[in-house]
Length: 318
Image 1 (cartoon, helix red, strand yellow):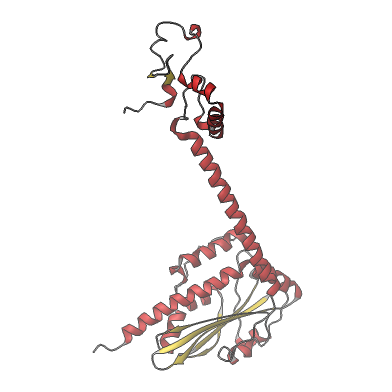
Image 2 (spheres, one colour):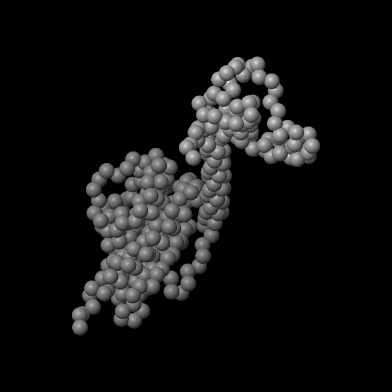
């Protein structure tokens, strides 16, 4: 059947439909002089009023398919009403999803605010005497670990060389922080690798056990849009108490599990120097700690893959 747009359809006097807007009888006389239409459907309506009433109720329930004055059911060209309703429905679902996301994020922020300063005791395997030398008391502690099929020395080297720029998730988190705080993007070219990049930003290695552990620290004000990390000598860092700052220390550590396996551990500790800095950092931590924790977990996956690849390449070929 040849397609004819609905808006070009009209009914002739006998209920027939022609294309082009002109009926067979309409060509012979003015439509205004035609007597009222009479067909079998009207007689059927008189004999079955309930059937007609139900039919009208169905028509009224679907206004896009209601008949026009000529008695022909018309559907808007191209399904405009359906598209409009679909768009409105999609907008409602999108708005509802955004509201749920906002509520979920607000819940996370509230949880971060309330749990700030409430520390989970370290397990015997997580205790770190070297970190205790520099920061025996702290307000925040984040600990993560992963088992790696590689010797401890290879695992630690892979951790130090972890390239955050490989991960789209981590890059997105950094951009989100820049957007929220209004920071200017870092235009400087930085070296690749976790340890090389952080020391280039100002962090300083405070202690090291070759092949097993690296401890890095700095003082900073992380709530500033363009944060500056200030590295200090080990003893100066330990005694630092200048008001308005946050002391941060973190460690990369690999514990041997046999000759071919190890457990990588990372721990980050935070201590503020006065109540004002504590209040500022607590608010910062509540908003950004989900991203900070996610960075740590993504890092574990990156270093595990890299360390195990290095271990396979280091195995002697038979």
